[in-house]
Image (cartoon, rainbow, N blue to C red):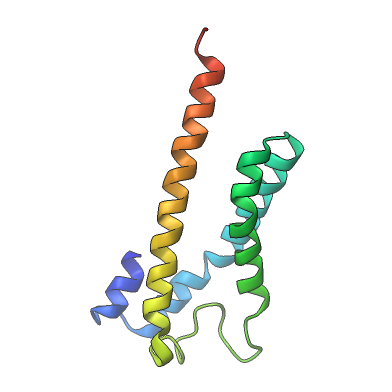
Length: 116
């Protein structure tokens, strides 16, 4: 979010912004896919079903990158067609999702440890 807002305010150029963001796309896809599979294996159905659409979206977004682009975030297209706004909206939604997941995982951890 901070990198995208720096680009929006013109503090950094599009190429350095996109290279910073593209560096984290593959670890995000792998990490989210691993967490989703672990939730399926451990039979946490609600959390699995909550993570599945986000993992699917991340994989879809990574696979559908056009062949000439630098990555998911492309410096030649980030200012065109309102992509910067859509990337900002997606980052805010992901931030909310990860905060929700953090508190759900924390609750599950505390409820398993705390004596009854």
